[in-house]
Image (cartoon, rainbow, N blue to C red; front, side):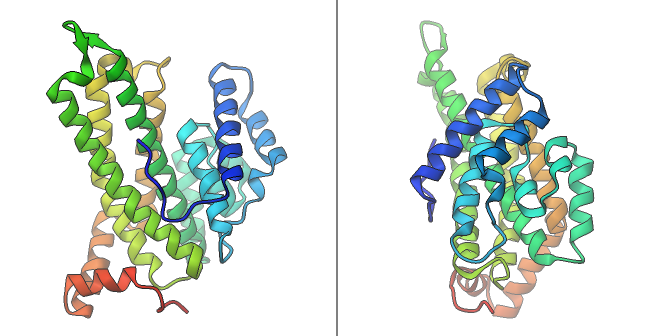
Length: 279
């Protein structure tokens, strides 16, 4: 399932990133390169030079690169690499490294933490989309009782639920990306959008994980099949996004306070979607 983003990077950047990360991921999962080799290739191609923390449309190219990495499930954390520049942590794929990186930067640089949160959202959305696309292809090809799995109403219902969550999360992520690209990472609107995205992610990841694995059955958990790569990434990135934003409760409390201050939930929502109040 592919959804058109609110803002798109240059088509050449998107195509180059998609091809590069797909090829690198294929080599990695075939055991032909190491994580260090993968990082060196990414740096040689210039993808590590994207500057997502800068103002303006630099975020668009960075978003295309981050999404391409997530769709390919390439074992390099491009969100962490582009925001923090930490090469070792970017290829460690260690949740503890993520936690340490977030904790070290939260007091010193709120903008860097917001950028990393946005990067996580981009990764989660791309990985959910990849898992859903993989599931749709699988049920179209797999046959049971003389017909494709895609023809069974229960299968259609499960994937429709997953598609709803992907669409909802993609919408809030694209809104946050547009805010960062147009107003900069220090925009006053961005924290509320990221809090909302973290809350949506909590539900969306659970539904997409459950539905995609249900339609795949046992094969979805096997080492040889690609679904488990996206599943592990989704759980890892969702947990780190919640860690960075202070958890579901912290996000909900801040959004609730904003609604009370604005006088209604609708006013708070429209204020977060309207440009013009950033510094």
